[in-house]
Image (cartoon, protein in one colour):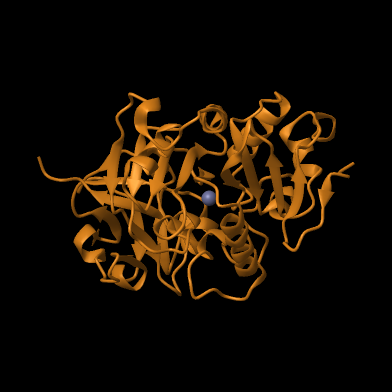
Length: 349
Ligand SMILES: [Zn+2]
């Protein structure tokens, strides 16, 4: 069915201008036609310019994939050439579909984009993607994700200027500006092309696919996506969030009473605080044992800040001050491997 995919010196299968007959009737059918990491190249009206889109770095975050499928199905001709990179096809295809962030025992692909590069399959795939971006040299890159819990949409950038603001504002009005180095794709902004992460909200939220499709349609249709002339929306900025992480040896569960004899239990409704405030009276959960032997909050310089933000009272976990939370997950796997949530301090007014 995919005669147009040709082998290249890349782990990405290259598919130029797929025929509408060959992409299936739904995004899931489309996914099942892909074999491993895929690069779809769509010819635009001006082939001298190009833009890139990356999605499914995480296999359980399907909104970006829905967004790619929609204009393909509607046969929208983009204004410039568009390169879609879809790395975690194999993880996404695992039944029942879009469940695995990555395959078991694989590294998180969106932590593999900074030097020194490792040598696992995921590290090599990340380097391959970077080589593709270098050779096609798109004027911008959008990396589309879903939050692991239910959440409003937001953009994330490591770089503040009009180009990055303009890219985020195609999708959403909230921007998190971070200088925490994690090895994520958007960190290439410093030495390559403007690159932003778009977090569409939860994979289960219907609004997530809608915003991804609307934003992507603008991205492939507007003559200029790097200046703010296309929007009168003002962006809301959240600077330098910190991450609450589990320490090695600790573990996490979610419930309305303490479930761990040695570890952390967070309340299931903590997800409701995404982009909301918690204050010193907001009980977040329970910790068995010492706070600092279970949890850690490190700033961009690597300094431990846990005791500045959290306290234990009779085994119950409370913020020490008013905080805004986002990327709150109730998925223990993500909490273990990534973080429990991001936080910023709300300035006293
Ligand atoms: Zn993601």
